[in-house]
Amino acid sequence: MGLVELIVLIVVVAVAVIALAGAGLVSATRRRRVGRGAPTITRAPEPTAEPEAERPGGVAVEPAPPAPPAPPTIERPVGTASRLVRLRLRLAGSQSGLGRGLLALLSRDRLDEDTWEDIEDVLLTADIGVRPTQELVERLRTRLRVEGGATPDVRAVLREELVALVDPTMDRRLQVTGTDGQPGVVLVVGVNGTGKTTTVGKLARILVAEDHKVVLGAADTFRAAAVEQLVTWGERVGVEVVRGPEGADPASVGFDAVKEGVDRGAATVVVDTAGRLQNKQGLMDELGKVKRVIEKQAPVTEVLLVLDATTGQNGLIQARVFSEVVDVTGIVLTKLDGSAKGGIVVQVQRELGVPVKLVGLGEGPDDLAPFSAEAFVDALLG
Image (cartoon, rainbow, N blue to C red):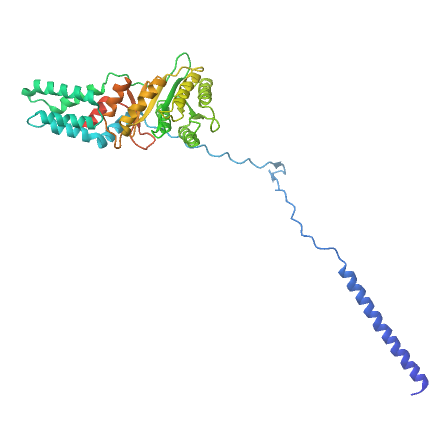
């Protein structure tokens, strides 16, 4: 190879090397430019507005407002006549032991002293009390001795004497209406556990069934459960319930409830009071205060004392103390369909000189009935 050819070869190789180096530099530069891009940011999608509905012709209209919630179902309580039928049926199933025992003894061929002692025992066991028992036995002795020759109807004689003992002449009407345009005010008192708040709710049902406009006052402010319970009772029959904060002054709540009743033209305001321990003088004094404060708005027309019929003598002790603090005008005997002894009706009326006006016969919402002496005795006798 000559000198000229060698020089040409060197030039060609040099050009090729320069070309390759230039291509690599361009490629690296491009890679560096790609690597310097901004980071990817994922953004939440912007909310998109609902397209407005259009009427024919292109006029936009607003969407219809949501439908209001359905109103709660208002119950229609049963009337008084149905309650009296229920009274007879419930009492016949739970109290007939007393009547059957007396009829069996009085129907014996020979009524000797031992038999009369057995009759007294049956009556005393039924919580009728010593003096009423002695009076009843004496009257039965006299009538059966005088009418003995005519083969008396023992059942009819016993019925007449028991009705007289329960005293059908007592005024058992509930004073639930006021005068001069004011509402009647019913104050419900008693010891916790007797069914006091439940009685207020059931009484509201009786009044609603008789087309009274009612307001309830939840003045048992020391028990949140009692307030909520009363609100539930009111909602079921469409009755307004006035309540205060937990632990509020009961007299203040009672006052507000009666004021609301006056403002709304209610026929009756029923006030549930705090459950009182009859041996706590401070609490009993406060109950007197509740009554005094309420009467700044309207007179109290009825004070109902709720007693558990199964408590016997303890219930009578409660009745005595309550009657000293507030002027009790009527008794409500609850749980009379259970293990209660029917004679408590006679004893409590004799003790206080006020009538039993209502009796509770079960757990159902309409198991509170006006008391009837005749229906009660008929149930006793079965």
